[in-house]
Amino acid sequence: MTLGVLFIDVVLLATGRLSIHGASDEVAHLLTALLWGVLAFSVGLPVSLPFVALGGVFPDLDHVPMFLVGMESLPGSSRSVLHTLLVVLIFLDLAWWHRRWRWMWGSLALGVASHLVRDMATGTVILLWPVSGRPFSLPYLAYLGTLVLCIVLPALMPRRVRDKPVARLHRRTFEESAAPARHRPIGARRPQQQS
Image 1 (cartoon, rainbow, N blue to C red):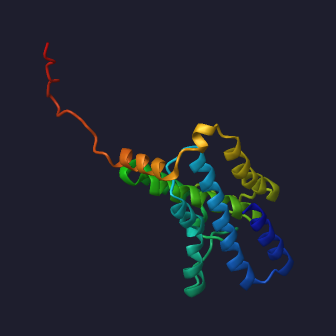
Image 2: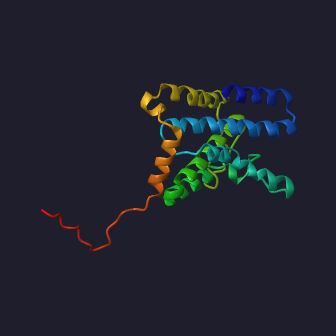
Image 3: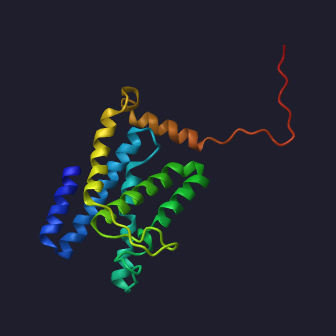
């Protein structure tokens, strides 16, 4: 996948055509998100790869209103509000408050974060909007380094983590997050143990 992303970026640099750029960039965002998702899954985080992939292309939904109705991008960037850290924080906040769907919101946040990192490596992002209008960028090699880490780190994981069956891990994580909390009513006493 990393080689696929690198190939896409070389083609984008060589052609510079907008029609090729749009479709190819989305594929690169999708592959980047999937690599990040595989790494998160290999370390035991409860993520869903389809939702990580969805989060990886989510910020580019802003292209639709930009092209159709001429919505303005943020000053100093060609990207809109969906390309900010605010979106990641909203998804993380939803993950914090909605335990049952934590895996979904966390997966979306991870995908959007991967999108922002790729966009900073291929341009600029007003990352801290609305707090700051400063554009952020990232060296392309640093971005490629994250992709290489997504491949190398799972291979270095202890065997017991890597060999855990996917379905069992997801089922256990989902059951834990969906299980109702077991609390005693306020003022209730603990049951007496019989001797």
